[in-house]
Length: 219
Image 1 (cartoon, rainbow, N blue to C red):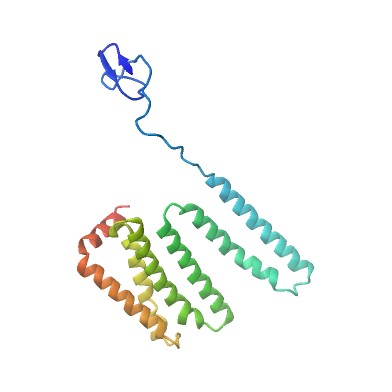
Image 2 (image 1 turned 45 degrees about the horizontal axis):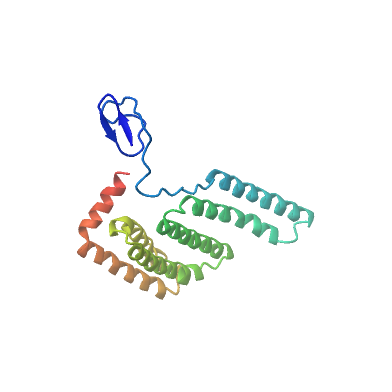
């Protein structure tokens, strides 16, 4: 046990100075009451650099193959187009690896954006709005609620993700009203379900809703 000769008190634990006079202390520190676990550190910067380097390699190799083949094959172009999305996805996964709900939400948003981009590139603009985006939003809402209850999070901790999903679901009405979505059954069903979820939160959890708004407005 450590001892302060000035204050004449015994000090438990492992202290560098006396907590009263901040002077030098004598003796040997006590062993910690609880075992300390070493935190595993991940070299995030190194992982980012590796992902960026691989991205550059894919882009350069794809461009070289595309030029050497006389611009006849479209596969290298697809690799060049997909590489930025893959890089962004890896960066998001590395950055938000400690928050599973945020990670899954951003992954789902990326999937919906990529599907809409591919669908728009084909010139059809149908299957992404008709099925992929509504089904992804519904699945994301269900997964968010299950993870929140499973991990034991408070509703205020993941309510903002549910609200974003509700807003995105309501935005599906725009292509429906404009006649772009010609098979709107899945989209309308997802909007209805998400509005029911929003109504439940507003009616039965108004305090958590207010706390969530104040929490994210102050950040």
